Amino acid sequence: KDGAVAGGAATLAMWNHVHSGAADVTEKELAAVQSMKDGAVAGGAATLAMWNHVHSGAADVTEKELAAVQRMKDGAVAGGAATLAMWNHVHSGAADVTEKEQAAVQSMKDGAVAGGAATPPLW
Image 1 (spheres, rainbow, N blue to C red):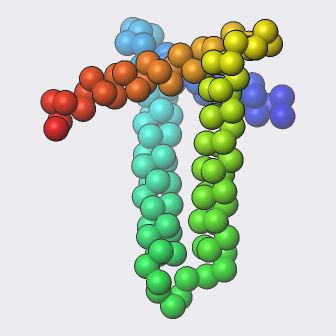
Image 2 (tube, helix red, strand yellow):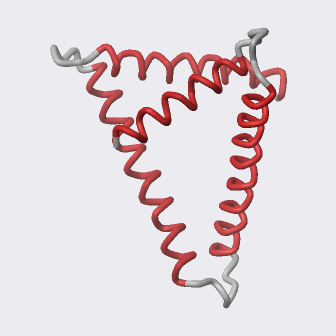
Image 3 (cartoon, one colour):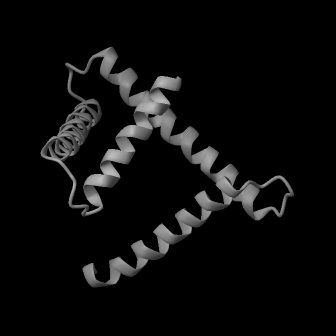
């Protein structure tokens, strides 16, 4: 767990460094970040393809695919429930609301405002 946390922190630091515009960003860092982006796009495409295959009604959908899609759905429901619980906790006025919770809810609000502001030009 400690290694995963440290690795995640180092990856995030490198990601932020590459996107900071700093003059000392190396080719190796640029390549690593591009690889993450490419992997995310490829992974997203593969996930979407599996999702669509499961929901297509095709006869060759496997139990493994069905289980993977169900885990995604379950995770989305659990994540949504946890997010709503935190949102409600922050707005409850409870004395034990943390700075981290407040910051997370503020980030959601800021994202909603930014998304709303970006939508009219697209509309």
